[in-house]
Length: 359
Image 1 (cartoon, rainbow, N blue to C red):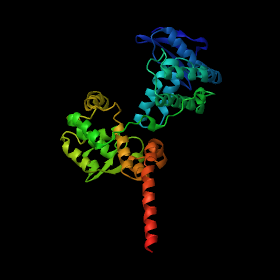
Image 2: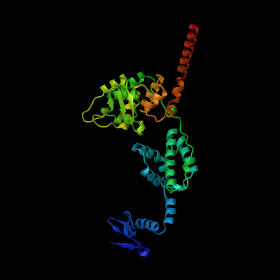
Image 3: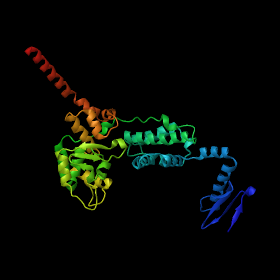
Image 4: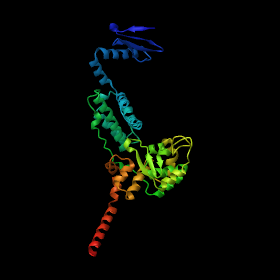
C-alpha cells in the first residue's frame, strides 16, 4: 500500500485497487473519498473534504461558485417530488440547456445569455436548424427556472437568471388539430388494422395515451370506464362509453397472459414504436393531416362540445381540475358554439311571444 500524508496529518491519499482515493478523520471516524484513476484527482477530492471540515464557510462559498448547471439540475430532480413521467419530461426539457451551459458554473450564467440562446433555438438559425416550438421553448425555461428556484431555496445560489427570460406560453388550442367528424376517425381506424378499435375507443373516451396503455379489463363496468389517470389523483375519473366504445372493446383481441385491454400480443404497448409504425403511416394512408396521437383526446372534447355537452361536464369527464382549464384549452371551440346559443335564445324568445299572444 502506498500512501502520501497530507499536511497536519489529517488526511492521506492511497492506492485502492486500480485507482486512488483519499481518507481523513472526521467526528472520530475514518472517511474516504470515491476511488478515481489518478493520485492528483484523489488529492483534489481530499482537499475539498478537508476544506469542508476545517473552514465550512469558505467551503460553501467555493461550492456555490463551482456548482455547474448540470449538477444543479441533478440535485433538483433527485429531491423533486413528482410522478416519474413528470421527472422524465423535465429531463427531456433540460437536455438542450445542459448541452449548452451544463459545464458552466450556474451562478455565472446571465439572463441575457439565456435569452440570446433561446432566440437562436427558436428562430432556426445555424445553431438550431430545427427551430423549437413555442410550447417546447416555454417548457425548457420553466424547467431551468425550477432548478434555479431550488438552488435559491436551499442556499446554493443568490439569483435566478431564468426568472426574467421571456418565453410566453402559447394558447394550447393553437396547435390542436382534432378530427372533424367520425368519418375521419373511422377512415383512420380502418387503415390502422388491428389497432383500429383502440383508436375508436380513445376518441370515444378522451383517454390519455398513458391511460390507454394501462387500462385493464377490470376498469370496465358495463358502459362505465374507470380511467386510471396519469398525472394526479384528481385525473382518475369515470367516462361513460357509447355504442362505438362498446364495439371497440369487443373487437380488440383479448389475451389470457395480460389484464391489459390494449396490448401488443400480450405485452405492454410501446407507445413511441406504435406511433412510428402504426399511427403516422395510417394517417398518410387515410389522407389525413399529420398530428399527434394526443389529438384523439382533443377530438373527444371537440365532439362533446359540438354535441352540446356543457363545458363543466366536459371538464369533469376529461379529468380537468377546473373548468377554467377546459376554457383555456378548448375556448375557441366554445366560441364557435355562439351561433347555436343565439339560435336557442331566439327560439325561446319566439315561444315566449307566441305564448303571450295566446293569452
